[in-house]
Image 1 (cartoon, helix red, strand yellow):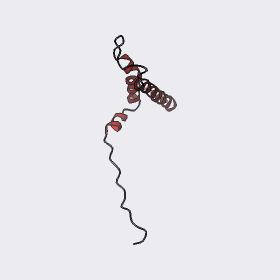
Image 2: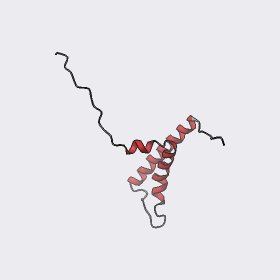
Image 3: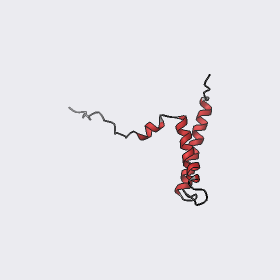
Image 4: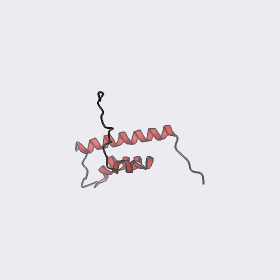
Amino acid sequence: MRQQTLSSAFRQRLHDAALLWLLGGGTLLLTTLVPLHTELLGWTPAFWLAGAPLIILLGLEPSLLRVWLTPRRPRRRAPHHSVWH
């Protein structure tokens, strides 16, 4: 069976759309215009505004999770040498 790959332009548009969706949904959730949990819908607003775009991003870039979870270490700088020795 032959695997189909997404063209890079389509993949980039999908990536950008998911980031925009996540940014907009995160803004709505953080400003509490849309609650995380409702009596009627449960956790559905949180899933569709934050969970779904995260799943899409992780599907497009599986290594993104490893990047997000690795601790950031400051880079070591070369020792500073004065101009005048």
